[in-house]
Amino acid sequence: MVNSKLHNNKQKDGPEFDPILARLEAVRLPSGSSAAMFHDPVELSTIGRESEFQLLAPLRDSFGTTGASSTVLRETADMSKTTFHRAVNGLVSKGLVINAGSRSRTCYIAANMEELT
View 1 (tube, rainbow, N blue to C red):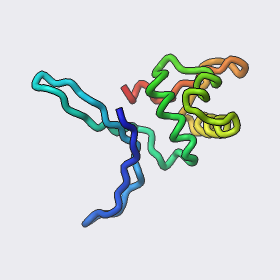
View 2 (view 1 turned 60 degrees about the vertical axis):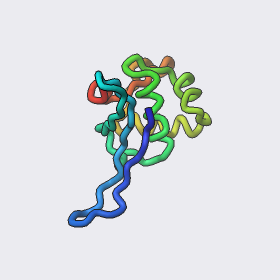
View 3 (view 1 turned 180 degrees about the vertical axis):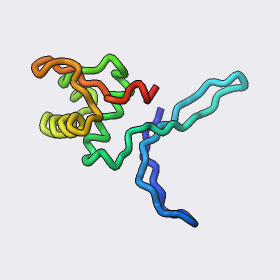
View 4 (view 1 turned 90 degrees about the horizontal axis):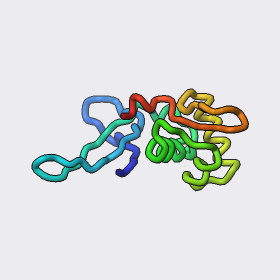
């Protein structure tokens, strides 16, 4: 699986659109292997920092609906503590990530996991 941002640099008869988050996944078909591109419903225009974008991918891909503690998620995303806390707090304030645990025992889950599956 490959996560990517799609950009529209030129369009003949229409306005440029904001970058969108997409992922390319291998797909097994009866006739052989192929690939499919999926567009996630999280719009990049709501994500202010690159670190927020960087945090959503491992949260969705590695922890799905089970979620992850702040320590495990930070280590998986390979971020400093300061960068992680800024990113996760930004995502929580925008409603893109939910703390399903408590303040002292966090369990972060992507808010729209049911839409991503």
